[in-house]
Length: 110
Image 1 (tube, helix red, strand yellow):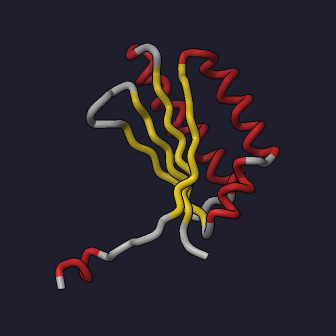
Image 2 (image 1 turned 90 degrees about the vertical axis):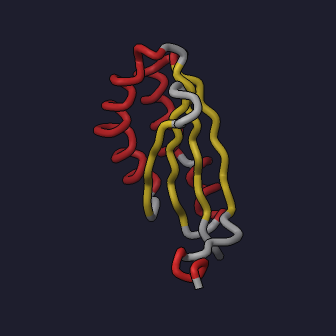
């Protein structure tokens, strides 16, 4: 059993929504999702290449746990809340990533 990540990619249709989306995600959605998913860790970022692209990552102890979250009632509730807040202004995709290698920086320098 290794580490798995649930990745959510969001694409904002309008640049004018970025500030409100960022604030909402920071204060409401990410904390709620972390709690509902019972993830080990969560973080989010904006693309440095395309300013309309936002990523959120949720870390789990294995692919099975991440897959179960994807199918959960909690996920359905969060999706419904997201849709109520953003409607069709934000398009999302989800993926589960199976971490196959992780090298600490110190080991790479040795």
